[in-house]
Image (cartoon, rainbow, N blue to C red):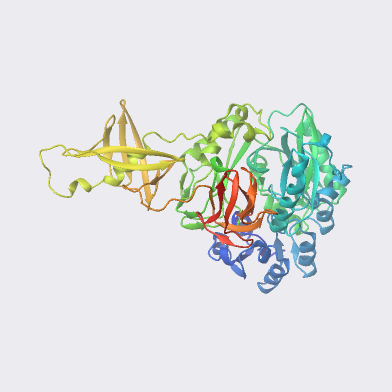
Length: 613
């Protein structure tokens, strides 16, 4: 029996595994980098071990340090979570060689399936070793890992080499393995997967289907179970293929077999030999704890001959600290407050007051709703997201709400091209019309008490705010009766609550302010100074860092004095485990280049200047 378990991971998945361990009476051990010194997963564990450094290559990808940590802390088992070393056969062997229990499949199964190239061979498929014009579009893909990292779509042959280089660099950084391969790219298919669970006694469960078609940068955003509106017989075919894949490698534990479904036919993608981020929707539908089953299987307990019966429908949305309207740019800062209404599941690796940094994935939390029908589950999730208190960096909350309400999603006609078609409309600014006024009235609360009243009308006061890239100016007045504003009746106003009546309908606005950052219900505002700061403007053609991060490389042949074309890639930043391309804003000459590989930059740092031709 396992008594003490170390999670070789961080954040949300470490906290989630710890929760099950507490329910089973198992002591927990966390590992943490210096950047995660005060992270939630380190705070809630029974014991912690420091991994010196911040970069994944120095910390969470150092299997030797993690095994030493497990031994030093007296752990008798290791759970890898997902990402990092979760699909690394060498790490699994090192855990077993140290006399510890590995909460995962045998190393041989990981070797067979964790490399997507070898997995395809097992399923009688081969990657493209030579790419011709007729093969386009193709997908460059990391052989190890997942989460959309190390993937690039290539539509022109001349872009293939640069895509291979970028995918190798990103895969090496995220997984410690730079191997990539090329396969045909199935356009606008549905991403459907099957959860499998196998024991050491020959039983393999196929736990239904999941649809994960709504993706950005090949990383899932919204997932649900079961996959809706599949053609007759397809679910059973997918179950059979998934069980076949698991039996082919004598699989043990939890794993996921992924497919693209196009024209009613399944195309095998890969088998992930680990727990998936989206596993909670399967847990909700089948009423089980997959982590508890992983632990019991590792202890040698058999599964029942048949899996439990599925009930209802579940939908999960991933909350990210990112700006979807600005190329999904990751956001940093303080997460002041995160709460969701009762009745939905919240999986997170953060608490109020935590700092969202640049080193790791920008996912803040997963919100999961379960109900008897799909329509009810979607409605429940939308309501929870809209009523969630989310104070801190810019997030994708509005995108999630609009996506869940989009006709293609509500009628189950979505595919992996969803955001490629609809992103502009889903990210168009649509702030709450009276949010800026409510913020101004809350800020003005109590000021009318300063000084004496005169029998002359006060001059209107003005406040300016920005939200979703747009500026708003509002006006109000102090009167003997209190605060007034044109077009609305101010029913109540204090520092935290404003009630306005418009056309006979009263609306409540809860206001929270953190410096210049103001949250009014679900709208995030930035207060602007009354008078613009007369600072010097940047020269035309200046390129500044859109986020804090690390310069990973400068484009080959680009140097001071180079002639560049508008849109030409100049350099790449890495932030939150993803690479972000910085391109020339105009055609001209590179008159300044301040970025060098390995350099840490902050938001607004001047990277380069292109003098327009």
